[in-house]
Amino acid sequence: MKIKDDVVLMKFDQLGDSRGHLVVIEGTKDIPFEIARIFYIYGSDNDIIRGQHANKESEFVLINVSGKSKVRIKYGDYEKIIELNEPHMGVYIPKMIWKEMFDFSKDSVLLVLSNLKYNPNEYIRDFNQYLKEKNKGEYTYENKS
Image 1 (tube, rainbow, N blue to C red):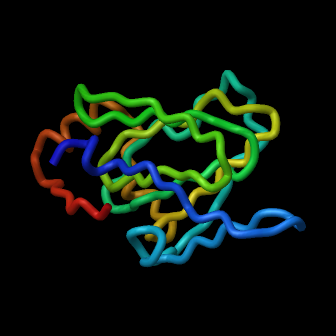
Image 2: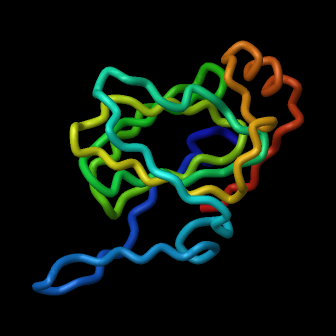
């Protein structure tokens, strides 16, 4: 399956009233996995590039809950840039997709949901090594959208 079918831009329902907005995200309901880990990135300058890796097993949903940032996704020679600029919008990134987060606004808080707990052994941090592993053809995807 091509990356454009696997990387999914998501819009979450906004609830609320005159007091403000509320966004609810539930694992296996609003996103395609059970949530095992949550972390967030903030305080990054707009010229900093975060990520720069692929994961052998982890899947992610990235949501800019404050401010904005961009996500560059790569799968072989396919590349796409997604701007996350609404707190009810996210992007689903399956395993074995190269990702880079950049162009952070001063008020950016990038929330990341993952299906697995942190395991440094499943990270591929060298792009050439990523291409070699991807080209082995061991990674298949289910379209979870």
